[in-house]
Image 1 (cartoon, chains in turn blue, red):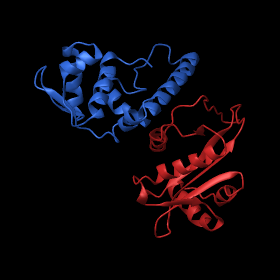
Image 2 (spheres, rainbow over the protein chains, first blue to last red):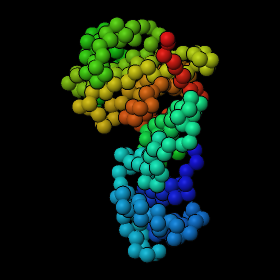
Image 3 (cartoon, rainbow over the protein chains, first blue to last red):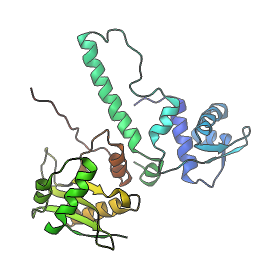
Image 4 (cartoon, rainbow over the protein chains, first blue to last red):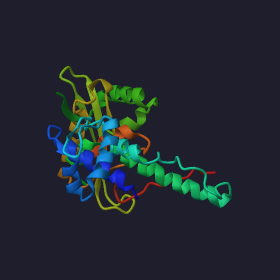
Amino acid sequence: MKLQTGTRLGLYATLELARDPDRTLSAADLAERFGVSTHHLAKVLRTLAGAGLVQGGRGAAGGYRFTGNRRRTTLMDIVALFEPAPGSRGKEPGEETEIGGALQRVLAEIDEIAEATLRSVSLETMLKHPM
Amino acid sequence: MVAIRPAQASDLPAISALDARLTGVRKPRYWKDMLGPERDFLVAETDKGALAGFIAGEVRAWEFGQPAAGWVFAIQVDPKTRLKGVGSALFAALAVRFKAQGVTRVRTLVDRKDHLILSFFRAQGMVAGPSLQLDKELP
């Protein structure tokens, strides 16, 4: 499954911070860890903060810590902050045809499986059983 | 804390009632068949002797072409005792019985829209297995 860079960074940052909720890490620390620009990561952290998953940060040196619930937050909760909801694609040309409809059913099946997987894996499960 | 023990005939009314309450379907015959000698059917009991949950499974070899594995057919936990580790204790006890029978893998099938039970099995360390379930409405 192809996720946008921001989504993957959101997952990395949340999991890294959730590993030890008492620890604070700056956007610069996290950016260095993942090999991306601090600017890009700061934007991702702002989205996570808006959702109540992390808190803190004033400028590049400000520390962030995890403030969500490890057992109740799933990978889907984070993916949904950055990606359009599965199955929410706009109408594609040709969808009204018989072949287009059949193809659409296959794509919807893939979306449903991906969503079930992401919704069933909590941060706690990820950190306890790295797959 | 709960005690885990093999299910017996006298547990069937409570098992059937708990399952019917949670699924909306009564299937007493199905639960009676789970007491068969080849099955592993365990209950979790509170210190007051009430049913807190149950799990049923069996070791099967070459099912769908796969070598022997322990299959979990059903698990239910009384909502009053959820989030207290009853399901995990039942799963762990069943896994011990499966291992004693010489298998090293445990499998189950889950409704992909039932995120609660999917999350439970994920939290036990289970990941997607090698098979995909397919089905079709018969004309």
